[in-house]
Image (cartoon, rainbow, N blue to C red; front, side, top):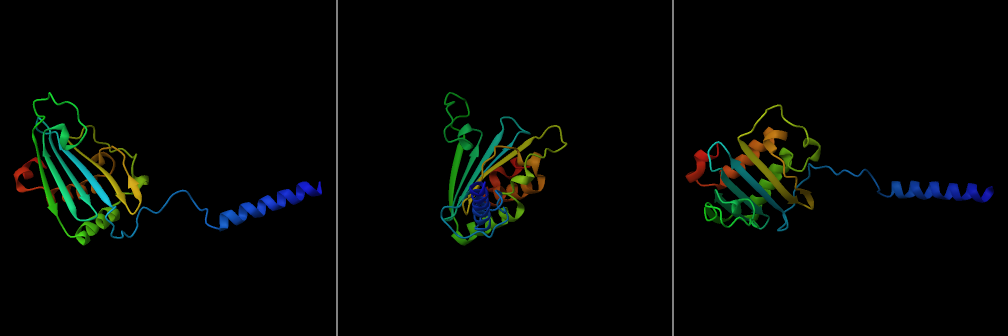
Length: 181
């Protein structure tokens, strides 16, 4: 009996020690201070389905300041591994590369983090709207915090969607400006 009591006592102290040593909750605060790193990236995909064929715009921003903007109706705009090469719009893609300062990329990352791009608690709450003619999705890796759900942000967080759309507008030229609305 004494041996069982000692074992139980030891195990309870061991669990308490592990808990106090830093095993805290499983969630992490999504509102972080972004540190400059070339490993940070954000990928935004926007479709306007008001007109057919749907216009697609993809903006990839990397921590080293490289911004790649793709636009067109081809599936290649949103999927580098698209395989429907017999599609009539397969070659309707334009790619532009822009180099900005890494500090500017970091400012964009911080703005998106402040808007809640890494906050998983916000997602999964559907909007009451029945149909959306616009689609925007984001994938991100910022300071080892990741987000990669393929949901329409207009449905789950319209404010974040507008901020993401502002980033797209910032880098997309005026040629497709009318297609963004």
